[in-house]
Amino acid sequence: MRSVILPVAGKGTRLLPLTKVTPKELLPVFDKPVLQYAIDEAIAAGAERLVVVSHRMKPAIADYFNEDTKAVAALRRKESHDLADRLEQAGADRRIEVRLVYQDEALGLGHAILCGADHVLDGPVGVVLPDDVILGRGMALVEMAEAYRGGNMVAGMEVAAADVSKYGIFDLQGPVASGQSAPAAGMVEKPAPEVAPSRMAAIGRYILSPDIFDVLRAIPRGAGGEYQLTDAISRMIGQTDLSVFRFTGSRFDCGHHAGLLAASNARCAERAALPDARIVAA
Ligand code: G1P
Image (cartoon, rainbow, N blue to C red):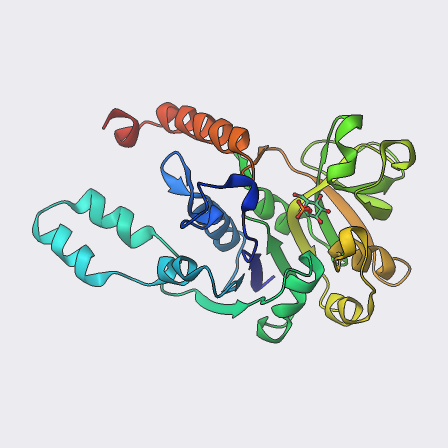
């Protein structure tokens, strides 16, 4: 997996007025913006190139990836090396290539991924949805990259029966242990609880076979009138195997106020447990 797509074109209306001028991906989870967790996870999983699918009305996303060498130098002159390090670590490491592309219309996750098609490198392609912040000892995409043996792999987590209609839901052949992958017979986008094939929900981490792009070009609009990644993955079954990977960390839905707060609290507790708890103490 040499490239990871980060879809960040959404308007974030559910979080207004927080998102009136600040893209939701730049809201804080304790000490880092939501987007930085996605960047760090993608790079830790081996990405050489990040394909950021953004919107022209969100110029701060592009700004976030720009190096501020002057400010870093000014901090170093003042011996504020800790702050200079933090500023240098914002965005992506210089060795990582960042491609910014625009999704001008809100046509769904499948369409967002397709916007990145011409910018990915050869081989399987990772996707991280930054809204799904996953904390814990293992980074979800890293765990998945280690377990990946081809086909399409999607992160999964059990949800309450009442919540299945908010997610892509897997059709499973048996239980899946934490930290393990298992084959899935299909996936349905946002089913009603009565018809959901399981309670195992797709969470925003994917490792996709490169054939996905041709299928995304061919699918009709699905749930919510949008082009759904779930539909493309389902359509590929028979030719391209689907597996679900049950990640070990805890997932926070940072597209909601309560999820942002819970993620901040969990991250604060994680930082406090580290030997170097400078940020908490400050
Ligand atoms: C998207 C996917 C869905 C997945 C979810 C995870 O939905 O379409 O399959 O379960 O992300 O967060 P969205 O939340 O964008 O509606």
